[in-house]
Image: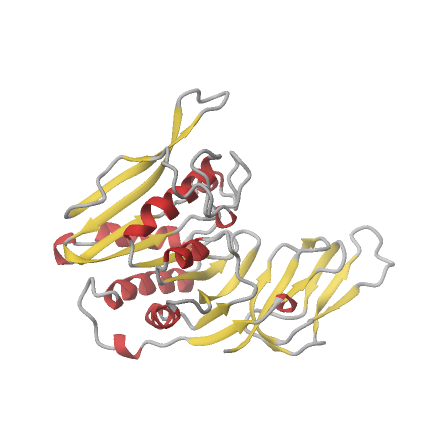
Length: 333
């Protein structure tokens, strides 16, 4: 957690305190051959009304994941601050350079925002943004949601992703139910310690992520799940009055117990899948075949699941290489 106590170089163009609806940007300083005294203007919005908790909503951690970016833009424009009992802070394109480039990682520094926390106030843009979120913003937040999808390279069953355990475990489970995706995937030993989720764990902020579709595009069902989920979270947090049925919202809990549930491609080639999202498979079941890209006389290499469960994510590009994750499976929690 080195660097958390040092002052951020990032400034915000709008006040985050006080009632009303405001749109602005974070000024992330950056200088290169083309921009000697430039800033990266990461968009931010805040809506605040009567006293109450602060909810942080994030999207665009990866630039090629769109459902969350659309859902948060729509939601913040529709909010009436006078009707809120609390404050909503929205960061709809957290890794703006990656969003501008439609890439998973920033084209400026090559960093994955969800592998950059706790960040560095003196580091590259991605590290600076991560530091600002963890050191400056999270201490003011009581609840958080980070919206993802599979991006260009993969797709997911719509689900909440939950950092399992910790002091806020009960609140995170309740938050996953409120979000209301069909599944809530709990990760423990496989959890990433450099993510937004991990930053919230360190700050003791109850938080869920969400995985909603993928393919570098937007599906109607995934976008609807994102929008329905974020509005339900605001009601769950007490910022808005509850609606009929809110108390009955539930999600199906599943778990990714260990790394064996991430099926690795054993060789380079063209992957032909034999399993699909939502399938229930067992260890040893056929996952697909890897075909040699150059010699059609070479028989395809079969690939079997190392661990069974529900297929919750799959790789989309057909061209693959040894080490790529082909499928992710989860078991009932």
